[in-house]
Image (cartoon, rainbow, N blue to C red; front, side, top):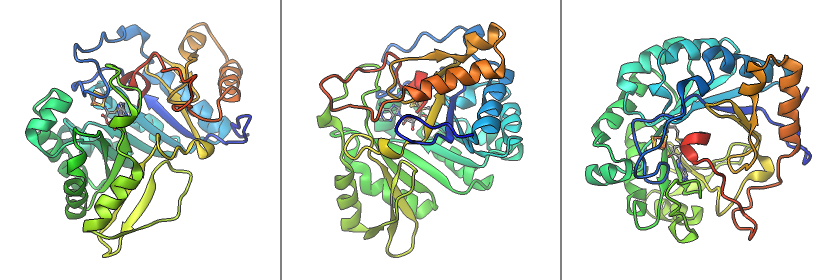
Length: 325
Ligand code: SAM
Ligand code: SF4
């Protein structure tokens, strides 16, 4: 059976935020004063996460799972969770800030994690500190090396571009990717920042990224798939880049993504304003059919698009670290 919404989109890609906690406080994600973490008993256990994931895989043919957060590597015994989900035989990936990857990359690979995305928004130490409020650039760069040494392939770098903040580093990032053999994906800044500083003037549009890279290292477009990134390959064969243009060229028409937050709410979109609690249902003794009814109800209500440019656009109450990017 397929998980289809009222616009005919089939959902096979599950993102699971396994914690809301994080060792960074990135400017565009968390408030300056930090977050009040969710109480531990409100967070899904590994058994509960596995139960929801298994239901989605067995009943609706979900074939791709990405672990995110908060920062997924701060969750204790992470390789145990990875091994449980790897047993579902899905394309299993994780998004991390990379700061502790040197310590865990080998164990995650051995447990069955297939792909890694590492977030990095500046290659300049002072700017990195300003953006993340942590002096950890050297750890993240070493974490990227650790991921490559552990055999992850591909390793992707997620770089959120913000006008006037790091948009002068586009070529530096492209060259870092070419030199290291990693795929850099530039992400447009989205209105999910806790401090609510987002504005259209802060978004660096896809076309500008492409023109900037192309002027130095010529690129050509690669055929689009349902994946959110618009991809380009270097004409000299030295890899590719991607741009995730959520704001200027939204890809909602082909969105196949569903989400589970750390506290067990099911969300049909990054920008959804309604949460449906699978945790409360599970803890009240719900059967798999009961959970399936909640999931199908949520997907059935999914909007056509995120509506960032609509006058009626409502910012979700949760910021990115509580939804999982
Ligand atoms: N802590 C992990 C990390 O940073 O990779 C995983 C969670 S983080 C919320 C997931 C992704 O969301 C990161 O790549 C981050 O850069 C991105 N992100 C956070 N806030 C964003 C925003 N307002 N707009 C666009 N991307 C954002
Ligand atoms: Fe933490 Fe990731 Fe958000 Fe940065 S982007 S504060 S690393 S959750």
